[in-house]
Image (cartoon, rainbow, N blue to C red):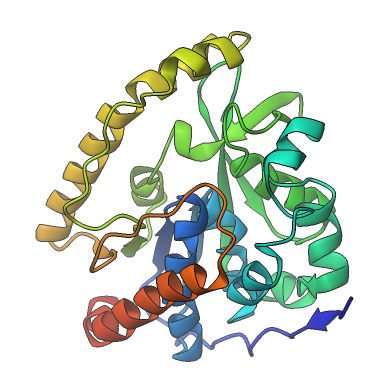
Length: 299
């Protein structure tokens, strides 16, 4: 199978005295192709950040924002979305993980579409992932700076969907999807003290999360993790409040928000590359449309 390696773009030069910038990338499974479209346009136009925090897909695809590999996330997802080794029911039934640990997080970034660890390390951008401690229900924020196999394990932990993934064991914790405990970690980013905060959402402005109708099954599947069950049962309420507060901050000029200009709906596993192209194109279009306003905000 063809091995692809695209080295990262040159690390952007940040003028002395420029405002510090924190970027927040929401998760959302394959809706993350929207985020990839946004960050690819930013990379192509020299937009960077002092720090980025990603959740779930915001981490799996957003790591390319630090390695400066524009186009990589779209390319490998289109190439492998129909491959049962990448994700699917067979993986779930045989390993306990919807997305394959051995292929999606093992062979793919080192053999088939190589992750540029050299650029990831050279880029001074701070890159933080959010996972959830499955036993306490608390969010865990962890900085990645090497881009090696341990960092990829942290990325996998951040994106491990409850009930569709096994907990990832790191540093004495059992970790699952960060979106369960902190879906849009802008409050954490604001607490870091950066001058500007830019948030990329993967749901349109009118979206409201509804209660999870799979809770009866989730209570059985996650019976060993009551804190996770409680988080999932109330997640829609916390998520909607989080977005309401975010848009209040946007109206006050305290954050800059990029979100889909139209609804983005996808299943947990996408097999059609054209679906990924469509979501990615919406992200690119929205990034290009807001580019001048973003530059003004960052000035």
